[in-house]
Amino acid sequence: MQSLRNLKIWEKAHTLTLDICRASERFPRSEIYGLTSQLRRSSASIGRTSPRAAVGQETLNWGRFVQIVMGSAREVAYHLLLARDLALLSSVDYQRLDH
Image (tube, rainbow, N blue to C red):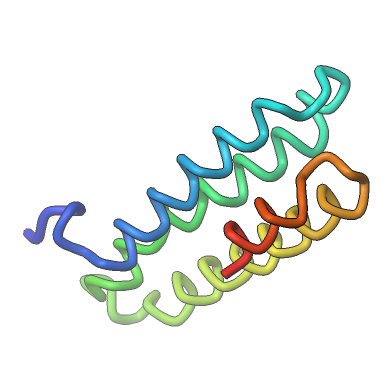
């Protein structure tokens, strides 16, 4: 079995999640159960699900794993846009994270 750390998709997803956790630390406390939680959970979902899609061990479910990863990525993109538009995230941080 291939180590998670050897999967490029997992590495990128993990880095994104770490960056999002750091950036969202500056969000107001009132958002801890709202946008902060949603953003962190959707970014973590990419790293949590991508190894199953990348390895393809469960061939019958491979397409489903890819759909989950893509759905989570779209959620992250929207939550980042929302955070920027609510002035919770600077334009610089938004551009850095939404790549």
